[in-house]
Image (tube, rainbow, N blue to C red; front, side, top):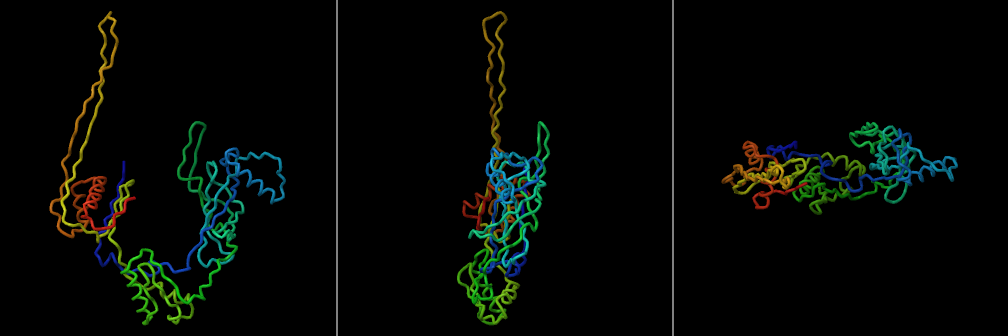
Amino acid sequence: MLRTLLLCLMLPMAAQAGAIRLKDLVEFDGVRGNDLVGYGLVVGLNGTGDGLRNSPFTEEIMQNILERLGVNVNGEQLRPKNVAAVIVTASLPPFARVGSQIDVTVSAIGDSDSLLGGTLVMTPLNAADGQIYAVAQGTILAGGVVAQGEAASVTQGVPTSGIIPSGARVEREIEFDLATLTTMRLALREPDFTTAGRIERAINGEYRRAVAVMRDSGTIELNIAATQSASTAHAIGRIENILVEPQRKARVVIDQRSGTIVMGDDVRLSRVAVSQGNLTLRIEETPAVVQPNPFSDGQTVVVPRTGASIEEDEGVSLAEVPESTSLSEVVAGLNALGVSPRDMIDILKSLKAAGALHAEFVVR
């Protein structure tokens, strides 16, 4: 049975648009992470590794690793069941230094059944420029469970993917000198002209001089030299904690798979009336068997009998909804009338199509 969650954010406007730290609203230009990826081998599996006939690349990487360790395997046919080829991914955080450790994610790419209990062999991690920035190795923590017998098996979670906490050590640093910057751009995570203007005024008010300029709805340019800070890092540390009240768009988000509806109190409806009803069509097959008379040459036949009926439930009507009515109030009324979540989603779609729902409508 579908479980439905309806979240109506019926908060006062002042509480909804509360002051938020600047660090939670913007991204600082250049202060970002970098994605890393590598191809490696997991050993020590309990018979749940790759089938080397279906995954020849596993045998190839295993031979390469053994040859680097001084083991000659030329001409040998290796058929172990405790190794698996994997893709290793990680994110190199900004200003990561040589010797620091980061988490990695390990995912099987062959036909391995599980990575539980496996150990990742030393794997170099490359960035987009092809350079090696970290090396990963360690025991994998997989989140799934596999139990099997001779005739059946059961799997819970995803045992073919896992993580290694602090499993990679940084070997190369990203070349980025923050101290040499004279200007810096602040990129809004949700571009909005009103929010960008408020950020500009808040920063200039903090320094009591014009140090920030709004370039567009998603960019504010900061003059580091005008802040008269000891360094760029000091300027960012002071700016990122400034409180700003963001302005958000009215938005309704619907997830059709789970029946989830999320909306804000700033969503408004124009004057509209809604009528919704349920139509049920039922078809029943009750075939009858007809037997021939005794000692006759007749045949037994099946006579089809079909019964069809249509039932229409009473509709739900919202007559004369006042202008600028809050959508949360309408949804509360629909809940009181016992409207199902699926029907409520259809009603919201119809309101948007009719132009009566004044909000960004997102369907997932």
